Image 1 (cartoon, rainbow, N blue to C red):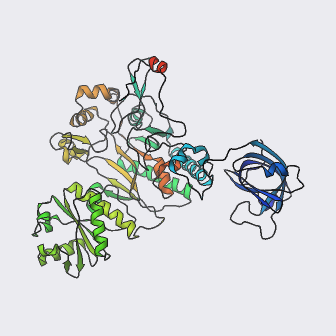
Image 2: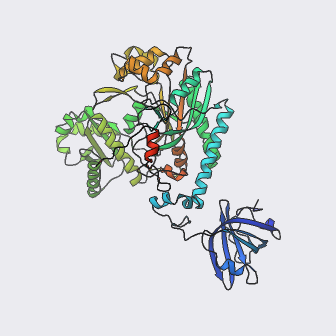
Image 3: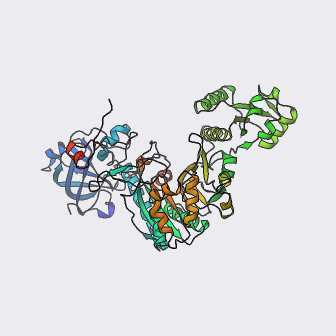
Length: 578
């Protein structure tokens, strides 16, 4: 080894001993003819001293930021008044008697300093420098700890870690596939997996009753802070289980990860809420439970008013806010709602058993009283959205989230997990005039709803479950269809007739013919979970080499063009748009 210790090892117990350290120059300071170097590696910083009588003094004077060096010397206590208790090595320094410059650095284009953050594009272009920052090294170390904790827990529960292929058959799973041309099979393409869904189900058919992997998934979709074209799932599947068995395993794994990474023990069971309850109370299936502000359906009451907008709407929903607000603040919220795609926002101030607002003239005293009773409002403001059921929920859900932040109602440093269960199996696609799977088509309908499949798809609910943390979905799963007949019925409803289903999913349907066991599983968005545990939605902070918003890497220049000769080998031709 080129070093005997790391830059985070040394303390007063090592005083008078010799050491050799390697790392990067964080800072160089000249104090009265004595040169001080802060030497950094991923473990910490150690202060190095070069005295004027050192034969390496002149060379030390030429050191600059990010030079990679090796030093040897004696560990001594820092002088009185120079101790830095904020540093692990703050009680000692190393008086150098040897210096070797392992590699000089040009002037860095970005600062390797947690106090100075470059633009996102520069950070991605010079990611190798950005990753030298202590905060980034801590984040990736935390990700490592979380990954090991997941493996540790699942191994203890009898799961086997099994890898599934990255070059697979293209199967529709919601997003667009990334595809890879096959040189050997001309004109044919592999897809990169959006998830290991079909393969983990086949592993259940194969008799591996408890499978997991930290699976790489790739989806060609529009990006945002919590979405990347390539990401990692803690993917698991279990045979001979019911829904609660899967929930128990996932909850145990997540709690173990939190304990190992943050030292926080979550003792309470995660809350469980049906999809219908979540939509009714919060307008979303991803509710943030760190604060209150529940929505109330007042459609039946509102239609008894003389307010035409309320009378004509499919749904009128109310958000009671137990704080008074100025008219100026209310007007700003109305404009904000319009920016979010809402038609507008009605409001009324609660004054005892009456309401105050320009719309109150349309409400009888009985309607006013019933609105206040239904909303359980004692004071503050009632906000109303009158629209389709879908839009009314969506707008008030966004407004609730905004007010939670604006009014500082959210509990700091809280982790509120909730299981959302009993989802509809299908959702209506207005644009295409057809039924789509609400999650995916391999989900088992509830037994009592099997008879409704063809005649009333809208009434069919499934053994589907999502795990939500602080208003963000961190994972999803279901009890799977293991009966090929039921699977074919579902595929037909969502637009995959038997011949198309055979072409796309024939290998799965064929496997189900040979004694497929009942099974179910789950996938935790690993990057998203780790980010949320650190209080951010930006998963790029916990991925070593993420892509930018255009799904490109400024560092290595991907995606890039292929040379004509390489295209010719693949029998491909690129047509450039004018």
